[in-house]
Length: 83
Image (tube, rainbow, N blue to C red; front, side, top):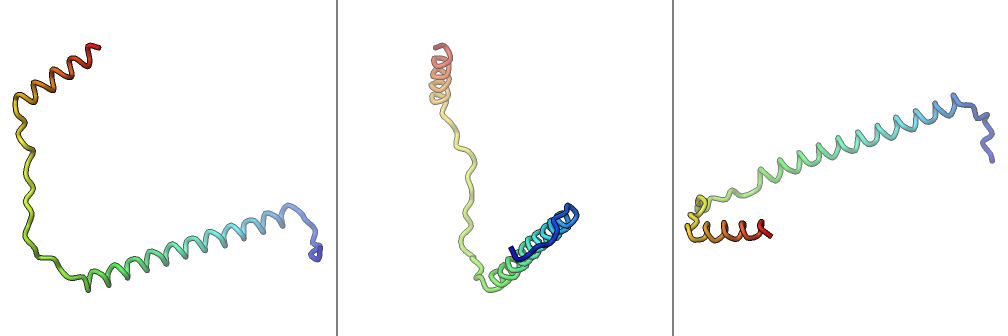
C-alpha cells in the first residue's frame, strides 16, 4: 500500500463530504444540461415542423342507451348480487 496516511475520522469525513459534493454537483450539472438540450431541440422542432390544417373532427357526446338495455343490465346486477 503506497498511500500510508493516518486514518482518522476527520480525514474520512472530509473526504466523504468532498466526494458527496462532487457527485451532487455532477448530477446537478448533467440534469441542467439535459434540460437545456431538450428545450433547444424542442424549439428547433417547433420552428420547422409543418402545421397540420386538416378537417376538424367533432367529438360526439355519449350515445343514448336503450331502455331495454338498461333493464337487462339492472336484472343482471340484481341476479349477481343475490348469489
